[in-house]
Image (cartoon, rainbow, N blue to C red):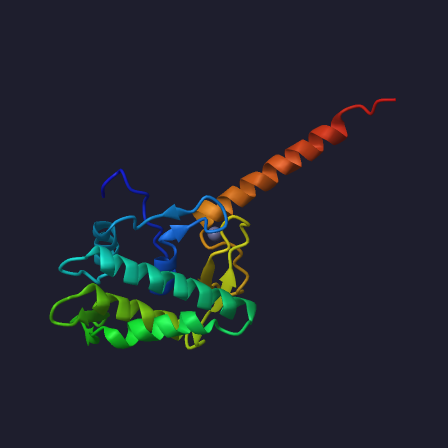
Length: 195
Ligand SMILES: [Zn+2]
């Protein structure tokens, strides 16, 4: 992995891992697929290797990403899905070619269309988003509790009470902030009152 680019956040669900290629949307946003090659890297890690990636295809990918984010956010809040986002998700789903295949050891893989185009990979991501937003999968869409993040994530925990999109980043930061706030409270209550 090339060090000059921000690392990927690897989640368990394809669609929400993809939306996590832009993090801290409500703070100082971090773009984790800043160029076409970086998108190709991300796809390869997710078993969706493509032959090449152009700037125009990166734009198609980012548009899909933000549409999934918008639709998943609305679904998490129980609001109507934004029509423009639904349109983009559906367009990407229809445009690409990919087929589910079974590996000899019994796992599902996606075989992209013959040219292994970015559009084919986006089709797989769009279909994954559709299954999550449509409520077909066992889990709950929720929004990260971090005010600078607010990412939509898919909670598959047994209790369905996960608060953060990612325990190692948003969860940890929140815990640290709470710790420092508590320390401050303790210090102020321990200090002698004046007057
Ligand atoms: Zn978060």
